[in-house]
Image (cartoon, rainbow, N blue to C red):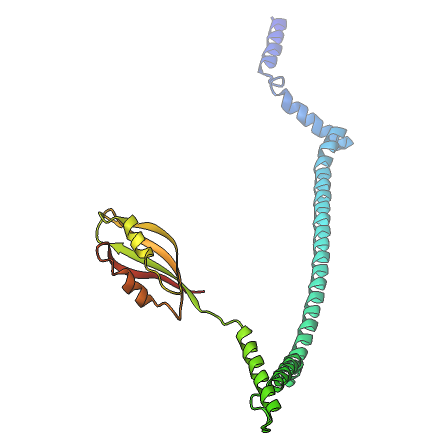
Length: 263
């Protein structure tokens, strides 16, 4: 009996023991004990060193990035200084050119007659030469002749007068001409426009020359005749021309001047 009770008490003690269920806690406590007595293990040291290494890497990266940024800033500052120097040089050149221009303007304002006189000298010389030539021509033609009543003087006078008249007659005279565009309007759309144009062209005057013509629609089937002519201003006027054309009352209603140009 005593032995059996002893065995039962041992089993009861093991049944109530929970060390195997809390083994992880005991292992950690043992690990902490040995680390406290012998120092941390290599794995713990590695785990402790990892944050320091990462911090050093971050510092190195930050320093390298700061160095790159400083280098870029320095290069930009150098380029700006070079550009500023170039701009200063350009400004100085512009100031020098402006100062020269101002000096030249002041000199021209002080002596404005210097250049015009130099340019006007050839013109005056030409005018003087022309005047001399005209005087020579007038000397060649003596309109009054001599006071001598000799026949030889009269003959010479007549010869000079004839030569002067021949010289004047050889000079061409300028004839003023004009180009006129006329609008000739019929009575209605049944008017024979071919006959109307024939009537217009039958008007003939000294200094009148008919040109090209065309029919221009007016409206409602009616067309007007546009005809061009060249006239001498001294011989033919627009009033006389319109009066002569409107005499053909059977075909022509009115005549208007569409364009008038001097030639």
